Length: 195
Image (cartoon, rainbow, N blue to C red; front, top):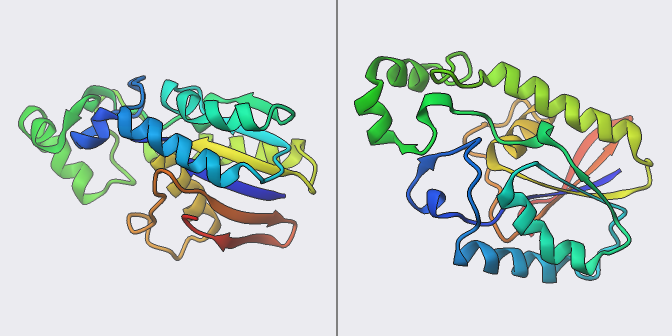
């Protein structure tokens, strides 16, 4: 399977550096432009399937791409939603540290082991995301060209599950770009990053 992945366009919460995994916000003006930019890049790509998370920001990002690929099968799957940050949703780092200093420091020290209050643990998130990807890998044709529109945490988690030696935090998926992977029985190969 040729898998193209992309991050949704920018939102005001990105600009404000807020944690907002499950908070369902729309794209800002820049995000709409980024969606149009990547849509133009993908215009001549033959897509068999388009998968997106169940969030407004991926729905809005996918709109111009779907318009250009009316014959692609569309799947909306909450398995690819961003991680829930629970009590920290809608707050920036300074606000979280002021409201929940002890848990914030614990999370900074061990982000893959400590969950935000009433939020999702990384391990639960990772299982959810990788199971969702496995489902489509098994469901869709090995010859299919599939586009996944998701979130930074979701895409980093998939990437890290395929390339565990890579640094999770250094892996960048830029808005307005897409990346290309080849998924096969032999494993996963990165073909292009942030095109």
